[in-house]
Image (tube, rainbow, N blue to C red):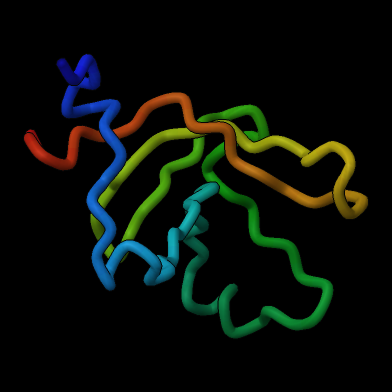
Length: 95
């Protein structure tokens, strides 16, 4: 008898399972005035509406797929960022 549940059973291989997907990580938003935007140049700083320790949102296209926390990857390139997932959106039953 197969003890694997649907959630733990490996997906059936199809030509689509090896296609890479781009995930966008949203770390915050800036809302400058147009006059301030026109003054931006190299070295300018935009203040975001979030802090470094705030959760980040993960999107595929415009669809939210999860929430996570930014981390610095250990053992990799110096300063390499990563995201640790803290919540995964139920894509089968979107609310």
